[in-house]
Image (cartoon, rainbow over the protein chains, first blue to last red):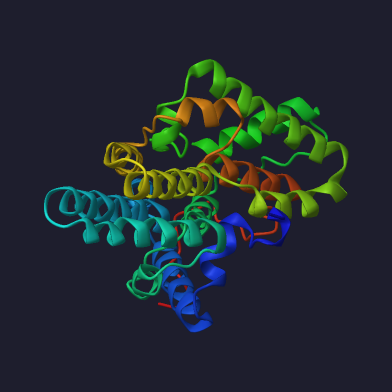
Length: 157
Length: 145
């Protein structure tokens, strides 16, 4: 299979979501940034911790899919073999999600506002920019190794 | 907590492997300083890069389907395989641990967090954050609320 024809990893869920739903998720993030523009450092730090704990699309899907798989296997092993259709369907859709970014629960997740890691990172780094974490880190005259170190420090804190 | 400390899969990766993975990130950033025109293409590469979630999801789906096929057509005992896969994915989603995690990490599969880290470091390096209005004094109320 030619992997290069598959959608880009971090954009594939957005690409299989209707534009209006993406736009709604994006505008909610923008509204949050606008609200935080007036916030003090403590509030910004608290929001960053919230973002650390936010469940992204992948995590939510992994937990949901694996619970359905285990449930289907348990029923298939103890009740009726035909229940094995459930884990087979879940694994198939899981593959489709991994490769194409779509599976049946995705439209619901997206309408509930569940974000991708890329969307969450967008809010995180907007907050960090707001806080001034990137102020003065791009001094062109510093040696390259120092610039890389300073920028990673700004990104990581 | 920092962005990389919150990354569940990073917490379960050996220190020496993390050092190697982060070393590659540093090399890419240093290369971007030497050749600023390479930042744009590199950002596109980062969006396309297969992260740990996508790798594990693909591997788990294939193993699960193979196990189900063997369990259905060859011997019921093979159903242990999809059960193990389901348990593994549940553990990965919940705690960030996975049986094949050490293997994937040694193959330099990065987490989404690792990739976003390089992405925003590149953007900062390019000066994406340099043109923003700086506000060093007490925070002024946002103009739109």
